[in-house]
Length: 75
Image 1 (tube, rainbow, N blue to C red):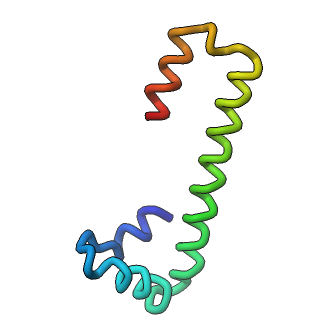
Image 2 (image 1 turned 180 degrees about the horizontal axis):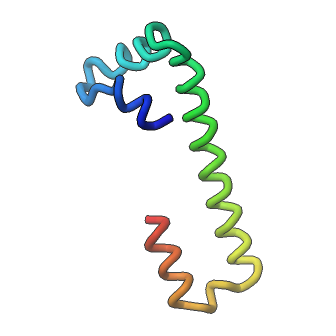
Image 3 (image 1 turned 60 degrees about the vertical axis):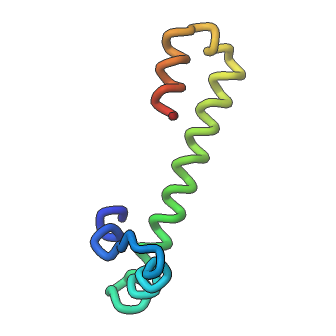
């Protein structure tokens, strides 16, 4: 969905809202693509936070190299 949204993206701040409105109104199923992207991203971050919480619960932070690699990937 990110690639489809990127095709209609503009980096100009004065056109940002117009870009979103164009995607939702003029692109076929643009509203669906936008909603799928937003919900998919939210679900992705929920999964990341659950994964971190699981690591904290089971004491995975004691494995310094593995934990630091995960922190670097998160950043």
